[in-house]
Length: 117
Length: 115
Image (cartoon, rainbow over all chains, first blue to last red; front, side, top):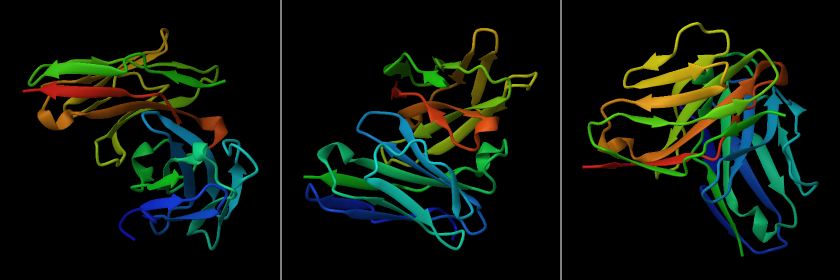
């Protein structure tokens, strides 16, 4: 697609429920990143995919968080047993390759605003 | 550990004046990149400017310039001739190249441009 697409744009869920957030990167972009932005805060790195593998998942805050990427394209971030502190905007970004210097290729989606009630 | 620090939670500037947003960073790795992003109230992240650790000259992109002082580990963003549309959150970020593609972000500075 023309840009990074994330769905849903907004999600309200009850505490304890599982949620799935989807990211559809720009076609041909091999690197994909998930970030979390809590209200009024900077972006917190969660996980990085190169193709279908995740060489860096150091930012996942707990084992309730997991992510996968299939076909080198769409990625799903799953949060199990959601807690109120999981409420945030989850941003996805993609780039042509993960280790290149060209930050202009690092394109963000519009994010999913998750609210846990 | 790598870290980005933005010490100005909020800034005000008069329209048409210049403004400097501060950013300091910490890394022991010699190969890194520094970035500035703009986030308007719509929430999208907009890339503004990039500076590589080995670049000899300060980066410029239109009204944006990056004041890179390597010895002081600072990478301040200068916006010249501020416009009302510049009102937004501004984030400084760093990428260390032997650690893949992830960016480490600062806490941001909220810039308000007054008419």
